[in-house]
Length: 250
Image (tube, rainbow, N blue to C red; front, side, top):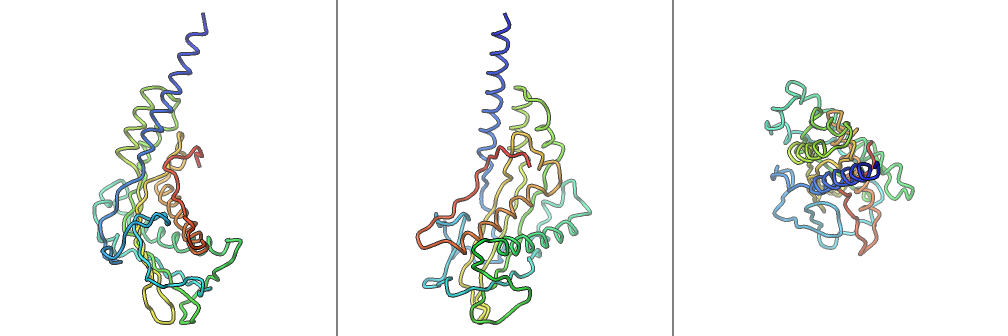
């Protein structure tokens, strides 16, 4: 007599998880509007790198460069965009942006310093050394997490809850976007540009979604790791993008 109800509950839970995964699988998002930090008309999608668009100067050989200066992150373009300031962080967005800029610069530097191969030496000050590159990043969009809606993921699974969670994620996904460029330190010449916009990587129980910018911080850390992989990759090697869905709730 108890087999059918248990079976029904199990089927319902699987269905809920399936619905949630379908909803989250679409968390990859479209390109951000052109902010003007880089010239997007020169860029195209390169399947070997995880960014939506990129460009590299023909003949540029990164192997001849062993030092890297990570410039302070530009936030001027994002501060001009007032759309995201209309949310729950009104009155705090300037300090939020400043903290995220420092967070981004620090994590790019940390990712390279913790790289086991130690291919690039991170410099703490600008330089004109012949074997050095400069990476310049502009954060152009950050949409904070919707704490109340993401808290739905903390409740016990049920069909209604799963559908609500899917709708909440689809409507209120946190996003983050950047434009970046690489310069030769000795000449100032731009030899590579890139642009990307990512949506949050969501878990079935989204603990990350319970803080304002934890999803943006996760995306920034993923970008930092990707920069290292691109710097280390061999000719013909592909650096894959991250999945939209994760089973890790932290």
